[in-house]
Length: 165
Image (tube, rainbow, N blue to C red):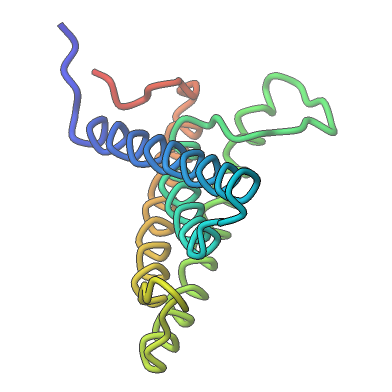
């Protein structure tokens, strides 16, 4: 019987959060479209909620995509199989650096937003809280890219579920 490690549970949690966010997003859009077209009464806060839900969904799934190496890739240059390990390593390193920059810039924006007391217009969702969540998930994505980089350097192939034992 396979045991799930703690990172495996975290990946499953992020999958569940991303799936729930997608379901919520579809439901809000459905209700908004029905209300707008049939009753001429759209959800006044629908767009505002969708902005937050999209951020939750995207940033919850980035670490999963990085860890599984299941992000979209386009091979513009075909390389020998012996260089594919190097190519994968460089891609993971670049991804880690980019998400570290995203985390740093978003943290600066979260600090600024908290100092201003920014909140969404209708639902009064504190903008800083959403931004800090994005910072944490960007940090998790950096760690996932580093784990994928280590796997690439060791020559282990990317798997669909790397944390299952």
